[in-house]
Amino acid sequence: MKLKTGFLCLVVVAFLAVPLVRAQEIGEGDPGQLGFNMEKLNRVEDVIRESMEEKEIPGAVVMVARKGKVAYRKVFGIRSLTPQREDLTFDTIFDMASVTKVMATATSVMILVEEGRISLKDPLSKYIPEFGNRGKRNITILQMLTHYSGLRPDLDLDFEWEGYDKAIELACRERPDAVPGEEFIYSDINYFMLGELVRVVSGETLDEFARKRIFEPLGLADTGYLPDPSLVPRIAPTEVRDEKMLRGQVHDPTTARMGGVAGHAGLFSTPLDTLVWAQMILQGGIYGDTRILSPMSVLKMTTPQTPYGKGDWRGLGFDIETRFSTNRGDLFPVGSFGHTGFTGTSVWIDPFSETVLILFTSRLYATEEGTAVFLRRKVASVVAAALEDVPLERDHYYYRY
Image (cartoon, one colour):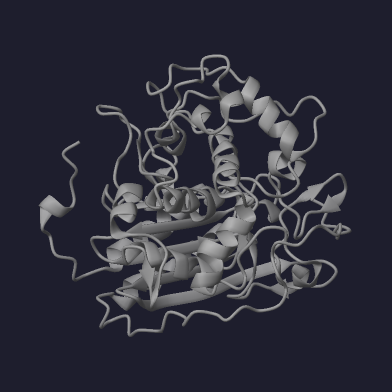
């Protein structure tokens, strides 16, 4: 793949270049005291370097935290090669892709649920009446959050359309591919319509709402939509499109056509900021003195909410046990949860061992065939294997579902 720098168009900025007051960062801890076998944990480096040698990724940022302390963090490889070589750093800003779904959208939706402004059992058409056409009238917010709406994965991109409002219009014309509630279909349409729900109910666009209610309170100064051009030197490029390198411009084609802000993709963040957000989830909705969600909301988000008897388990936003759960690895138990992004980002959280694993790559920058699927599984397995003081209280590790 030829690497070229591209012109970054000026956009309406929702991601401020001026630093916010950052929440206290998660402190470093002694890996041994945190229950890790360091010899085993250091195997992470071997796995990352093997993936780099295979040209699957150009580099990676790995952070492992346990019980509120960072046990392992390391950067590998490059952020960019042109116009000069840049090594990855912990404050590199990544295109989060589908991690947006849980970090921005599902969290925002649950804030509205807590305030009594919406109910998970409400049909989406209660708030967006035009969505109720063509067999969609009774699709609930819960079904959208768990990808059991029956809607197909994405809008048709084979014909020319442009604009946020046009995307909403096209989604409202959709007809479900499956009976709502019957089949797991991972759908971006679900989440950009949930982003529209946030806008309709709150009166603020999703990027504004998430910034005010999630990112600013947590002090996540490097997290938001539509990055300011001044931040480009810290942003990991993704891939060449139309002979221009995407760097600071969203990779997801549908989000790009929607103007850069959508419920399914478009968020940018750093490994450090994402770890703070994940720690907030692990701690039941609170980080430091800042509460974003109630413990009950977090429990709902992180336990199976899919129809009884179905084999694909999703929480509200979070993946628990589906074909997309590769970043759980082979050893973390069912009941842990997380999400991945197409660009190479991933988060996995295990509440039983109180562990958070952050693995960020810009896998499309390696080659057009770059992949993080196998790497995620291997790194998660290595990290889980390094935990040596996990209590084997088996009732904690199995859902009777």
